[in-house]
Image 1 (cartoon, rainbow, N blue to C red):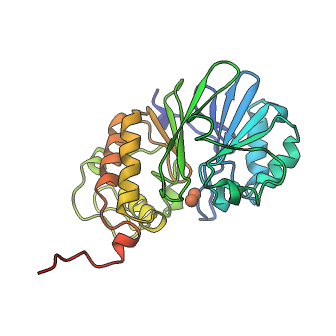
Image 2 (image 1 turned 90 degrees about the vertical axis):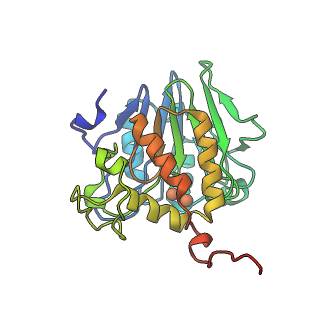
Length: 285
Ligand SMILES: [Fe+2]
Ligand SMILES: [Fe+2]
């Protein structure tokens, strides 16, 4: 399917794979674009990185527009504990209001998530054995990506559809006027080795649009602690072989050539976080 050619109504939930929906919104005010996702599986549903407090009403409207009832939401997954994904937990807890609701994250995140979530049981992906089986038998797998960017950061993989939810990994920020839910990397971009624009809003001299790699680079440079953590996470992702990369910021990657180009770029970035601040190590004479 050529997703990019579809005329997408961003005011509605957007299907990204069979029974998986983007339930965020296109942020025209230039804040950090956030992408919560909903997996519907029979009479169960799982909300991934549900969003901030200001985003709650829009996210909830879109969840309901998919046709599910709130009591179907059994799992809230939080791939780390930042406010842009966790801020609406108190609202979700009180509106869903069932004893079945469980929050899935990692033990490193849960003491922080508890400050948002006074009621729900907090499960740890390690204690779950790295996966959870839904009632239908569908398996959702979790992979740790430590310190990319939080100690307890992880990513979530739906084996049925090949969608990998990567949270801040593959995120991008800036150039909000050009934002699209599905990335359309120009062939010229995938192989581009010319020096890219220095700011995410600055247009590329070839495509006259902001450079997707500059946006991704700038975001990872600021959000991730260092080269080692980012490169390790890319190594984990390479072993999964995902068909679709669905990040919490920026755009979804769905073409195999774009996914491998993005992994390659991120693996080779060498000025991430502290590594972009400290001078390179010099050998002792
Ligand atoms: Fe984050
Ligand atoms: Fe984030």
